[in-house]
Image 1: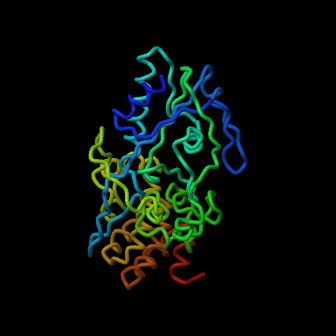
Image 2: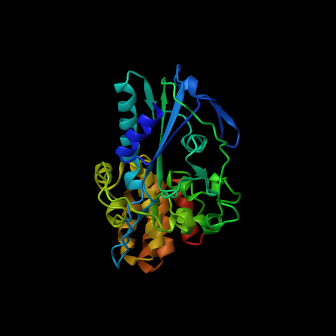
Image 3: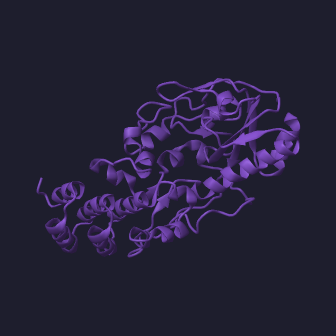
Length: 342
């Protein structure tokens, strides 16, 4: 069945696939044990697929009065690629009378390496020949007995290369193959508090970042996909920031991919405030001042930081006005810091 499965996947545009055992995984800094057989009793094989997500799309640049944000690479393909692989895998096994469980708690990255087609990079992402780290990985537990491999999950071919480590502006890649979550931009953009001194490094990103991926030599020259078996999620990878800051939840859902919205609407608005602060565009001052008057506490706090970063008389007047009426300690702290009062 292995050859039949691999041919089925290739015909449907899924270039990377392998089968590994259902032996337990040890994952994370505390070596937590994840046992696939506890997730799916009766599982006999673990199929791991990878969808090549590089389309050649490049971010649109900002222009005066129109600052634009950025997502990390493959964000618009993320949910569609995961769902597509799940549909293809589930259909294959169920048509043959087998059970299949996709999208479970099986750790996808170590599973891809253990299945033999992936290798770890020093940025803790998995890469594969011809796709670099532009991959979305799916796992599928099945009761079908397939020929399986069990490669060591620590495998890498990075050698002495440190491009991703040196590209990380917050120093989150302080140790090869490990990410310091307390300094990781992706973590900040998922909602973890971002220290003031690290906010400038976020740049224009509003969901995940791209520094280590773009720096990796394996990602420098990749063949772009010439077609996709699904529609891209969201209208652009470079949305205009100003309309997003004070947008309703529904307006955000229309403008942004589902994968981005998983972070939560208020987290997105907070991220947009930081990106506007980093934009250097004075057109961002009025919408930030509006957010400072009416947004939720986290957004107001980061709007205060952004106004101070942009500077100017209009921004300072908005900060002083807000200080006179603000009652939330988190926002007051940012206002006083911005105005040099602490």
